[in-house]
Image (cartoon, rainbow over all chains, first blue to last red; front, side):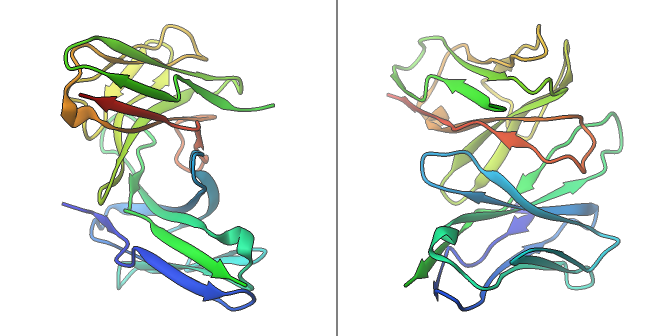
Length: 116
Length: 114
């Protein structure tokens, strides 16, 4: 059961335009969401996050939007640059009922290609 | 340089031959975790550790063991590897188990079990 879904395995965008990457989740207990970027032969690196008490978080060219009622979040990259070409993973976290933990549930990733 | 290191980066082995993948972080992080990445499944957590001598299962712990004897190291042990453990493995660390802290990932270990 894939609790975090990224339905687009790939996306191609022209340099300078907006990239929109989408993510849907099913677990209503998720209350913290993150985006990670991954280049080939490297580990994922943190990009931006959002708490469920917000509906938008912005960091430079990157903005994450959260629609709790639709259980949907999106990452906007404006303007897109060739260096943004990477795999983007959406991840979600839920407060554990017992103990602690910082478990992340990841989506399957979207390969973004920014073309010149 | 602050980093998470993993060794080896690539490993081809045979079914049943015990192996260990090492993970080390130099950031004095309390929290460490192991994930595996498989096509169409994203990254799935195997085990995590909130501090020295404190470990717990993630989503897919079967066939794996871990230990946390020192804060900086979190090795992943496959006692009897099988072909279904062929995967890309990532170690990650975080300053604390508080969810608002980002996780820092190592470069990955590609394991093939024949």
